[in-house]
Length: 308
Image (cartoon, rainbow, N blue to C red; front, side, top):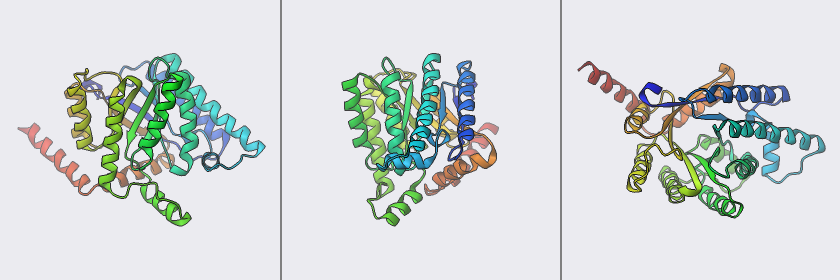
């Protein structure tokens, strides 16, 4: 892929574990990947998931304002330490770090942790990237608040922008527990929310860096147009596009051919651990009407074009 100017993000997609030994194993794997990507021009990012480093229930309790027991507080301190070790390793090696987002009812704890790391390591430039799921209607307000705090404290914001992959689960829980559904009412609202956040970040690019993780052509065109209108370098290191390996190659390789920074996310790991992640991706892709058939048609057309 790198011969075609497409970078890779090696994503050890293990999440939702319960035991300390499992979290330490994911930490060790992530640290070894940071060493590995540090040697590869083709791999500009490391990545991990919050629940790869700590129990979901701890994040949930902190997000929902519940107190931790003494043992749980010690456990949470170890989660914070794992985040810190990975962030420090990236900072020392000048590698960027992407940290994924998960369910809304655990996310505030992860967001707060990521904000602390940005404040510490994003002083001169963005090393640490958190993730905004833009099917959540509250994310632009959250970003604006974070931006205000970042300006006061003198740090930069890195964000991976995605639409999101837990929609059914989010809606079901909101209905079951009788709270406001955190998800936009329609796909059109989600698309608008994504593009509004993208524009806000681009307008404030001196304070930010964007990893635009999308399979949506219109959002990709939007960022391309913003870059071109602003007469910015297409390969400015604050601006990245990303798609999943095996999906939307028509977007990825055309972006790379045009000179934009683009990376493929390559999930890997034990099959039983990675399957939940891959199933969410498949559901996300098929939730867009006709997307799978369209991709197959594009591949078929490309094969015919190459024969000619």
